[in-house]
Length: 148
Image (cartoon, rainbow, N blue to C red):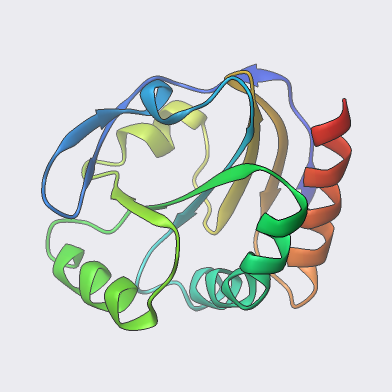
């Protein structure tokens, strides 16, 4: 499902693998696009999406100046698995935890994977689910929003 909305990204506190807290707005840059992917260890489409983006991530970075954050919505029981999985995959993204799913709830979403493109703290593109090839559509949306 593809959708478009123009809403403010919530400024919720998330944490990195070391337990350091960070407000989402502090991660967002005014001069570049940000992609945020909500994922979990038990979500096969989430991992397939992050793997597919990883395969072409360097090519994307050569063409577009953007940041990418993968935010795990795993609960406290599976957060250790999330850290081990992300480290084992060597994903180049910064990985954060949405420990109590506050960020996910504030976004008003109940499905993952959920991928957002943010520009000036506003959601300019939102995508739910993953099918092979969706990463190319996401890249095209990055291109479109880089020039707007």
